[in-house]
Image (cartoon, rainbow, N blue to C red; front, side):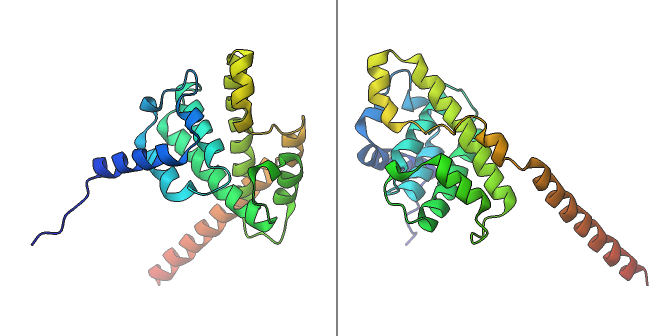
Length: 200
């Protein structure tokens, strides 16, 4: 007897149904944001990986804003979603945080970017920093577009901005480029060595 296979479409529908049960109801009716426009693969990711996380509602809000207000493509929105989720998992676990209200980017990003005890690579940390900064701008622009009464309601799911100048202070693009250049050189040297080995 053939085993029943759940189609991708059915999985997406189940994820959407589950998502509506777990996300803050106000986010589903946020002004100028239509969840019909949000790719269901993003909803599926949140129901599979972000459920029960302190940042669930904040990421859901960001996904809707990135799609409907900032009008970013699905690939970019998914990148934001995954980078922030993975980064917060590392940071919240490392610094024993439970509630999103504890998140203070001025303090925690400074620690995260310089904490040698964490296994996160320099590239991973820089990617989190740039993704977080871009995401805060998208959320802030959306909130500014709302009338004051609605802005007050939805500001509880904003992403706190970094203090002025802090991103530039923490950014280490040159270091990332040097690490990548060294890795490419090592790979090239290894390829050359293998080539000459084969010629013997």
